[in-house]
Image (cartoon, rainbow, N blue to C red; front, side, top):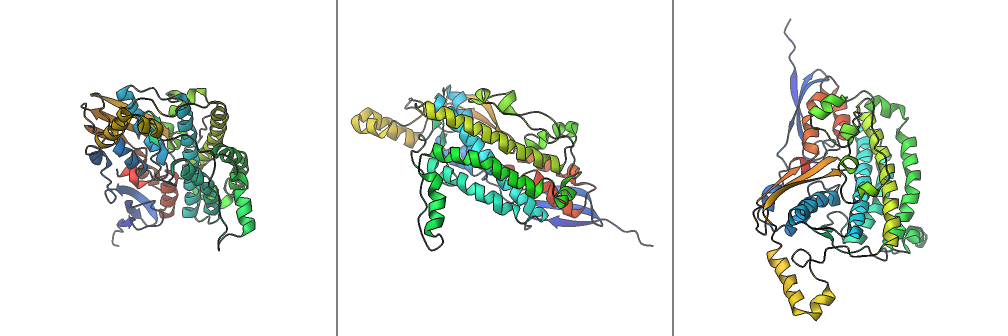
Length: 417
């Protein structure tokens, strides 16, 4: 009788569950995965090399495009690296705005992940609910920065501008009736902080809706419990961070262990899993959204009570205000010099990391004293997680590979940077 050999198939890059242009070469024994070999390089952004030919400030928008689901968080780590090289002290109000927007971004990221993860596995309704809430938070992005996704809002030394006093309003059109518009604009009559405060009071109820749809759903549990198990030891050895590490029971969160900005003033908990499977990682992300909601509420309360500057008053780093430019020729020269030549960063090297929604996102920056980075190296959370796919997928069925890719929350922009 002829020996039956394993066969090899391509999973992606044109696969609806591949979360970008990911190619997995799967070696199969029937329907069972024997080996999973991830291939990247189909979306090479060359961000690190491009940064060497751009001024320090010009590279901020490139950070948005790395992980295009967690835009401001990428900017945050990059700006922190520059601030440490220059020795800048960020105004307290700007630190609170950054923390608040980081947590808004974390909620945006997890909403997309949980909605599309459920969609990949076959739960169609979930993504409609999560995108409903994402719409409100993307409106916040738009109000604060002018863009719904690639914000370019953080700056070395603070943020681009203070929070707006009013929210954009919906208008009646052929898609929305007068009554629909009235309901949509009900929470938009005040400032951005008023709108965000209203959202944070509504959001726990929405999370309860998600829980009722998925958490005890028999099919969801059959597809995720015991799938893609990573022990705490292996998660650490493979370089996992964020929900991938906390899902395995390791209580590691840079916001608590190596606090930056004003996270040491915030009250929140670190959720951890028990079994390290896809289901635990789902539960961790659900609870993280509740904790992010708490942090946003604390930031709103502080920002309402404490006005102040949102960027450093150093014209070698930040532009002067328009009023000062119009009144003083020297300020106008500072403005033109900053936007044509950029800032000169003192020689040195630094590593700055934040607790990104997907894990530890770090920026290693080297300066030779010029107005451009000498070298930039990005530590993206998705890269080591993708490297763990072989270990998580081996012994599972082909259909489980979809659940595993969904649970690592992969975005190829930052993996294949």
